[in-house]
Length: 493
Image (cartoon, rainbow, N blue to C red; front, side, top):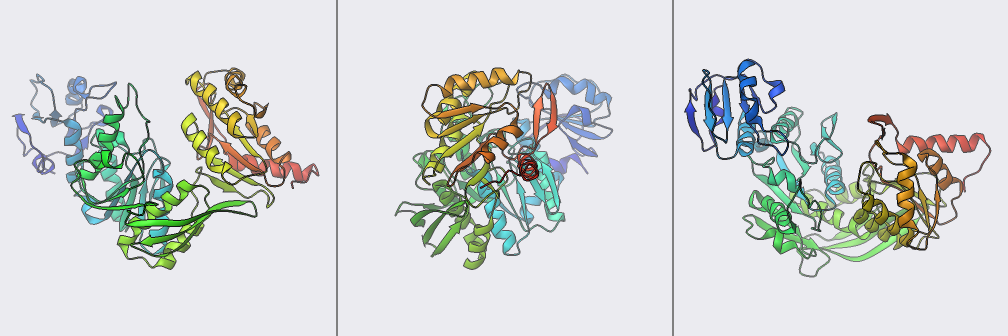
């Protein structure tokens, strides 16, 4: 492939060499450079790719993309661009022959709800026979291939590679989570989304290595709506117009508001045989009844978002209803079948905001008791431990404090910090360091009508201790506990 082909949609200047240079690979990690590569120098928060120019030339790189002044004497082509991350995105799209133009692309952004909504959308589309790829916080799904995720939104080269593989696998569409970091760092540049979706916006991801303030966070979310054909937005969110400011797309809205184009009315929280869910009616652009076996008012929003998207694929109402009735997302209010007499669920809530939202949601179902089992990660803020302990003690009837990922800290020290917060409110509590034994305690002492939430691990299937990740999946632990109780002749209600 000629270098000029990769540069065809970029503004650039050739400082040295020839744009018609033949290149063999597009690389942004100096360790992967080999003979004939074009290397893109990314100025990262920790590492600057420009510092590796002598090394990549030594490995045989034929061309280098820079955004800073560099002095290079060797016989290589040097291309100067304004923004090398943006250049990487456009070059990656060209390198894989613009795969996003060959499938319908759906990008979902927002503080909460992205993960669940992507799975709901995929469930509906697949149920309608539309083969759909998925890219998100938990994993990427390409046909039968499942790839664990490192970032919510992968680097632009990896994203375009995934798109290309999806096209090869026969996918007709892809639904993906689009993080504010992904937008800010141009990971989703180089193509235009068919659909851009806004779920909600709350103060989050603000700090030294993320966004400097809430205004920047909102602005970055809004970039999606300057890079999509159709925007679909939650009209009920108080920050919706801040995010949509300057949008260039056709716009549709959804929500409970009477002004929304697609509305949820007659919302009913229901509970039966150890399962929690919601029912409501859709009005406006579509009209039908919906039942979902995922609890909480935010499940109304997640499912309504999915309906607003899938409406554009002309999917029969019955297919949408069926897909939503069976959808389940790993580690996101995931029900685990233990008993018809109480409810047990697994959720990823691992900070104060998400735990408060989770427990508030579950309290709306008026359980006999709300039992919250959680721990906190090691090498993280003690403030988080105090806050989570206080929130659980205030909202749950019983808090079971256990170990999460202790990392390099002593588990007992972490539990002691959590208890400081727990004691600031009035809920009962017990401490059981071993997570499996904590789960056993919850099951063995469950009462009729209890709702038990195992918080913090969610989709994770490991426990990190002293730098080593040990296999530990709460679903497996629950199965082991049930077998042990059965063997010991202890009956679960």
